[in-house]
Image 1 (cartoon, rainbow, N blue to C red):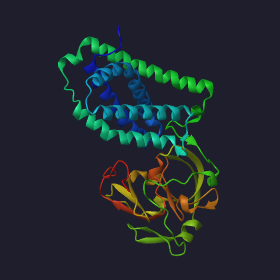
Image 2: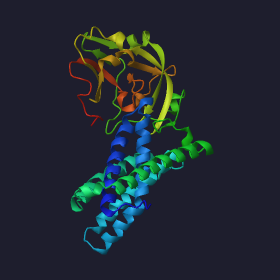
Image 3: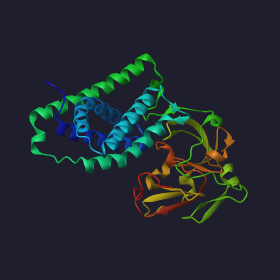
Image 4: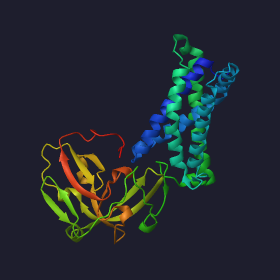
Length: 337
């Protein structure tokens, strides 16, 4: 049986594959626990499905180029974007392409994928394909199923080859991150979400204000009652580091939570993240790491430690903690500032 799909089915299958790639890509960035491993696997398999659809899509492209449309260059630009995103993703996942021109390959992969979106939306409007009942024929469904199975098998084979050969990608965490600076805080990268910047802080006047109790804790108070907890920070920039953090469990600083459904941790910069109130048992306000005070780039004088969550949840330069009756999900999936 030929695996090449008809032109209409190819376009629809490719659209569905790209939709899954984008959805699982967003999930992969957000996932910080082992339960999210399947999202990352799904992202990789969906990307390989796009690759397997390329031969059929090339037939469609050749037919389109013969039509000599004025906008064919935008269509070719879209194809170039897709190829670049796939190559960056494959190179990063195997570990053979960690940086490009001094830039992190993972962030280039994400940036190009986001840049692809408006071009893809234009292409969908300009080359709109209306689904028909005939598109769901038994033969087309069987071919599509074989392609999906082939993508899953190819993903498993690639992952197995990376492990068997000891390629750099074999050392990745399930999120795709590579280890950097574990138990060596000075070697742990300084990464700031979007356009946030490290603010100047006077440790003598700084206070951590817990609004529910009205208490403002000075740095000396938190340092004097600190304990050590080991936690792994997995950054969306593609690295992770395990450290021994010194600080105070957030639960110890809070009074009764009452009817609150979430806890909001706010930075001096205005950056804020909302957590489920049940997370109070795991959240930790760190004032040191590895037995030394935090560096400015890592949140001095205090940052949040949120085990099991990706780096953008680990609020730096924490200044205020407050309870809220709003649910924790009452926020953007990813902070916008």
